[in-house]
Length: 229
Length: 229
DNA sequence: TAGATTGTTAATCGATTAACAATC
DNA sequence: TAGATTGTTAATCGATTAACAATC
Image (cartoon, rainbow over all chains, first blue to last red; front, side, top):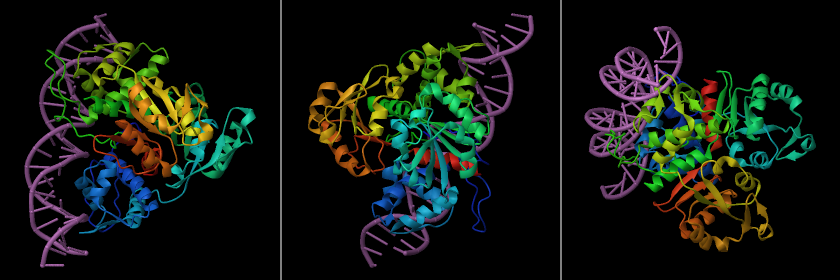
């Protein structure tokens, strides 16, 4: 449940039945949205590897979600599969993107031009899902002007104008824990709505802002427990 | 559910009642183990910040788990709190570590001495939870001997002996997607039981090995959905 | 004492899954 | 056709939460 720490309330409760007459009006439940995101990740990679169709069983192996659950999740939105064959990877990617309303491009502001920041900026992981790092900031004046991935490091004072101009909704904090809260405050001031926190700081933000704290160690503790028992 | 993609089956189903007469014999359910890990992360950071007690309400704000749920989870193992006061941070950390059986030190082998590898090796995130990066490997001969965090980069051929000598159970892949499967195979051969995959590769491993694929983009897609709706 | 917060109950709600008919 | 896999049902099981007495 690495999704669990996103601050959101569940929708109307469960998946409303789709009468096939129009788009769903209600929000997806937390669980469905989380699983659809995961399917999307695997499908995106499967497509890269040249796979054209995929069965719910295969998807299950990679996502560790029960195959019945996968078919059930998908069938709530339409009949996307072919019996005896499976799902077309390309079309399923489009369908899920439509459902998650994340078909477009989304711009990201990245804080921190250290090792982690550089790794993030030059990775495909975000790019594959339509997230583009359009601005990198660092508090070290010596780093300003440096090239990090596709972007140039800027001064923090430019934050507000960049967020406005580039329509940035997501801010990523790849900075030391001690600096995280101060920069989170600046991101909030500038109008960012989602903060992705790679530091260990326990961030305080207004209720309209969502913080997601990355926690590899937590995932590891969890995996280790099931290995040890 | 960033925990959801760890390949594990649920235990006996739900939390067995604790009669107070001895240790629980059954495995925790997936959900409980995931939440306890998360509490531990927040508590660890709260302790670093000098906090001595914490209420279920405060824990709830940082973990986004309902405060009743938190009290319920904890009370299944003992009466750790003080009414009117909250939980002692130090002692709750110890208790949860005991429950998760992760009180000791655990050694990690890290693959990849690029930006991401360096970021991981020099971060506190793993160290705070008793994970120690004891060996770093890279396929680039030019990097061998380089210092990365507390470790020196070694040749992949040393992997098996290092895993044996250092009793390594966890391998972290911070390598390009194209190289991930080959290195995962080597980790499996060497006897590693948990693979933490930071690449996008869809790894194939034997059933006794657990793969956890890091997926920041998935988490972001999920957060974005709830922002957009 | 008065306020705060835990521990616990009881009820509800959603997630999960086995099974199988439909059908490609 | 025969095999495979979807779509869907029905039943079960676990998670979630409001409420409140206990008590620090």
